[in-house]
Length: 107
Image (cartoon, rainbow, N blue to C red; front, side, top):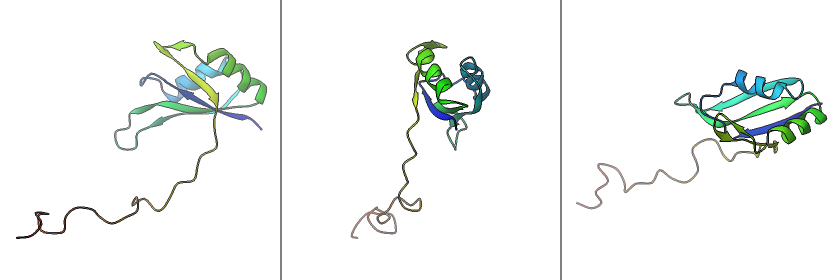
């Protein structure tokens, strides 16, 4: 099984295919994805790449971490497991505000 890498400090112009091409010089890339903002569709400046072997992943880390790409020093390291998210999307706790009808308090 391959190793998943985090690639950070990417230029906002870098696409998933650019990321795949960048890391393919270190071995076979199984998947490459630049993370984009759900609302705007704009890159968040980081992505994840899965390499075929641990050796290829280590070679990519050694070859790219701290090196400049499109004017930015890349951060490349082993991706940490995703932490579980809390709750169901409402962020917990009431609705805030000062009550209904304009929120001006007492009349």
